[in-house]
Image 1 (tube, rainbow, N blue to C red):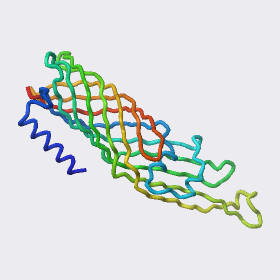
Image 2 (image 1 turned 180 degrees about the horizontal axis):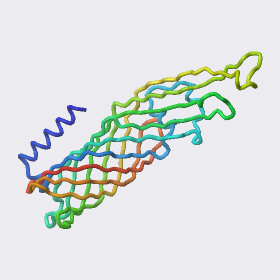
Image 3 (image 1 turned 180 degrees about the vertical axis):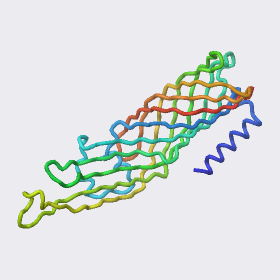
Image 4 (image 1 turned 45 degrees about the vertical axis):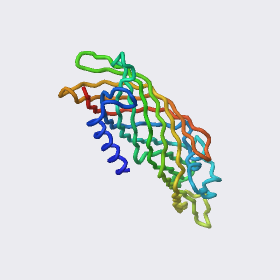
Length: 265
């Protein structure tokens, strides 16, 4: 992953120094963005995560009833690093700009937690935790309309990207508590009830997953030192995930971050 970042950076700086055109379109800017893309999966649950595993999970997990009522939390953490070139798609207007780039997400996390409450018992609740970690590389394209407003540059438009996650793994942890009582008094006397803790752990590599998203994009920036453009950027959209062994899952995208661009004119 580090080598891929270095190669991308070298490519961008080299092309910015020696090229003013990209695919026949005038190059306006080169940029980098650092942010977080919350790619929230609709129906993120134990069954979906177990379906990502390259090897079958244990029968204890397959036979367990992971009901929505026991789902207590879901996690989607996706730190994003984005490199882009901005070109002028229409020769007659420089207000319309096309951003083409690559997004890298390292150590993205998807996870769910389950809790089974032991009602009427003094034993702790049984818990299960699923966590998948992977990396994603995606190609991005955004068509944006730029408007000057005093010192600020406001922009908005639509975009899409297509990505693939790879080199992923998953851990499943659990704590199962079983009651143990005095053989004479049984379970009726709460003072004589004790429990034993059975810890559960599984690890597996996960399958590669295809991602596609369509989004609205907007932001605001300001130019300093004549060419350095600094700003903030936000994305809101929908998409899907597809991998072998699972049905297609829809996603909701909530993204944002800081942007730095170098203007060539």
